[in-house]
Structure formats: structure tokens, C-alpha cells
Image (cartoon, rainbow, N blue to C red; front, side, top):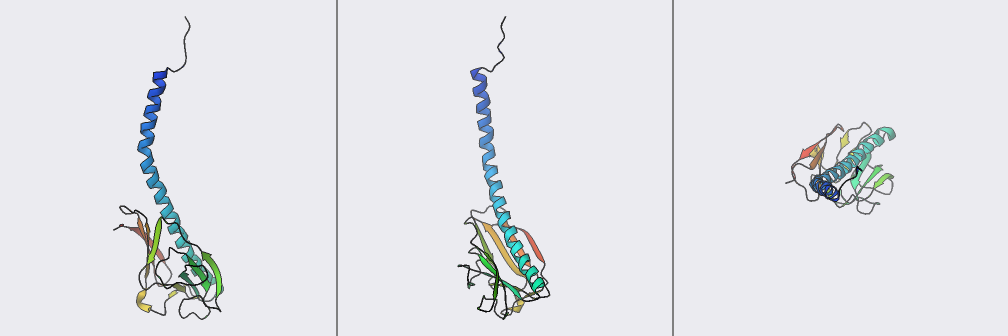
Length: 178
């Protein structure tokens, strides 16, 4: 008697149906995973920028500032950091603005439209002294500086809060999206 070692058409259709059901259940959690990773990537890039600013201040033994920028060549008067930001050696060191005498160190462009980065209202720039401590001439009592990174269509605790203390320490935590 001859034996067939293959699948029947019905067995194949049942296996495909079960696979389709399992995949359809996994896709929503996978998209949430991707969204969380994008948010984390942008938060890490922003934290790295702050750490770079502090590191450059220590390395150059000078004031180094970071400010939001719309065009990549000047600071904006906004607390919205989503448009991008500049890191520069702040020669005059008074207002945290990129002036003619300042030396541009790095330019960061607009972040993805999926997130927003905002600061407390008094934080239109971050400035580190040559000691690594933060400075803010315009509003000395505004430290610590707080940033909130919120994904578009945020749900639950997927928003991130970053705090920059006077002595340059960064702390971050999850925050409610509300």
C-alpha cells in the first residue's frame, strides 16, 4: 500500500487560518512597541545632546549653550524643541542666543512629527559653565529645567519627563500623557 506523506488541502487551510489569527493579534502590540521605541530613541538623542553640551563646556573650559532652533542657524524664542536645536560655544554667555561671535558646535534638525519636545516656560536655552554646572542669567530661579517628550496620540504613561539639575545631573521618568 502506498502512503502519502504530505498535507491535505484542509490541513493547510486550517494552519494558514490559525497563523492569520495569531498575526492579527500580534500587530497592534507590535505597533505599540515601535511607537515606544521611536519615543525612546528621540528621548535618548535629546539627552545625548544635553550631555554633549555639558561635555563641550568642560572640554573647551567655556560656556556652552543649547537652544531651540527653527532654521538651524539661529535660536528661536520658543520653548518648543521639536523644531531642532543648536549647540554652540557661547562667547558672551549672557542670553543663551547664538550671536556672531559664538562658535557653532552641532546642529540637530527637526525630530519626527510623531513626538513633541517642550520645556517649562522659562527654558528657552540651556547653558553650562566650564565647571559643568548649569546657568541661566535670564531667570536664575528656573532650575531645574524640565522637558517633556510626548508621542503623538499618547496613551497611558508613554510620555517622558527629563529634569536637568543645577549641577548638570539628568533624571528622567515616565509621565502620564494627560
